[in-house]
Length: 267
Ligand code: IPD
Ligand code: CA
Ligand code: CA
Image (cartoon, rainbow, N blue to C red; front, side, top):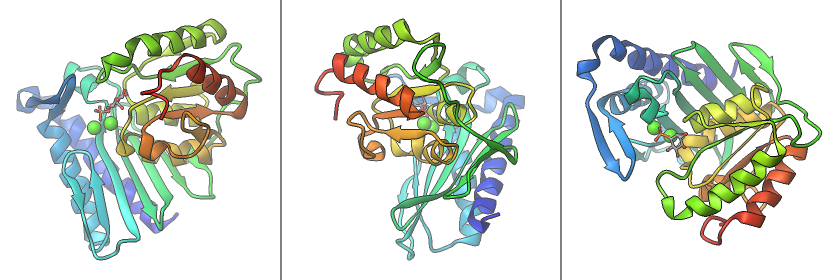
């Protein structure tokens, strides 16, 4: 196994165990608001500190970009860890058991290793560039539908940007008309991993942050899925607009997004 993936897994498991343990003492979980419909807890921050400490013990010179603790520059500018310590905080604070730790390493501009750990199901999704994707060490592959017929498509609602609700609902209506059903489970990192595992056939969402998708992106691509932005290009880490699935799913999703999206969303 790639030594850096090994460290990512160690960090993700430690953080995941901390998150799971916190459920035994829910009065020690303190929720605060970062913005409109955007929650954070002390557990998010503690989990991120655990991840950074674990990685730094092996790679003290690397750089970090974490959701809660921000950017930390190291001497080695070529290696940056992109961390979402708890993807699905809204689920976590309500006791909905669907959230994950997400860790990716970007090396010389390319995603090199990734892991997403779901502590509630003890499911570990991993990938190393060029070496495929795994769930609990077993190879996973994205599904290969012929078009949207019969597919289940995951998505996320624009709950932090409700000015886009109408366009979004029009896109969703058009997707729903052609697929079998839709899921909004509340963790973009797991949505991408579920595409990788063939549990859902496609995923689209807009306005995400790099830490939501950096690890899931590599895992989905290594499982054979395509990941694009809303123009069909690969600028999704910067724009936060993402579409994922096999080519025959991504193509109709992109045309529906283009047909119904407004200009503000289509960057
Ligand atoms: C959120 C989840 C959710 C997505 C949101 C993200 P967080 O991450 O990935 O599925 O719809 O846009 O912000 O805030 O729970 O880390
Ligand atoms: Ca997130
Ligand atoms: Ca988070």
